[in-house]
Amino acid sequence: MRFTWHWKVIPWMLAGAIGNWRVWATVLDSADGGSPADKTKFQVCCGLLIAAGLGAFLYPIRFADQSRWNDIAQGLIIAVVVLGAVGFMIYRLARFFDDADSMQLEREANPTGDRPCE
Image 1 (cartoon, one colour):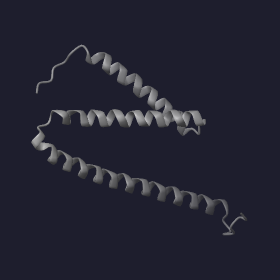
Image 2 (cartoon, one colour; image 1 turned 180 degrees about the horizontal axis):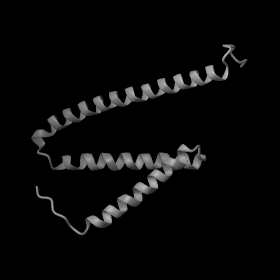
Image 3 (cartoon, one colour; image 1 turned 180 degrees about the vertical axis):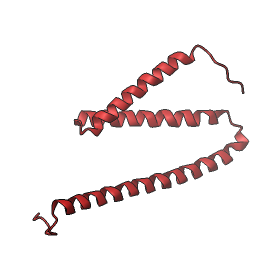
């Protein structure tokens, strides 16, 4: 396999830069407590990014020798399990820290230890 520079790369780089700018603008709009339309737009952007990433990752598998497909499938399954476990741990850790922060803020707001009536 040989990689060479071609002029067609420039429009794709520009398209990627514009797409990246749009996605991050959507992320920031959604993160600032945006409207439901912003959140829907954010979900659509995330879905498109996931689909593009999976497509870019899985497309080269078409060119693999069929005798290697079992090995490739095994590797993909292991990667999904490991990355899923790491993602789940990061998610749980973030929730733990959010809960700890909210408990700390509650203690600081009510230093006497009295719990507010609900």
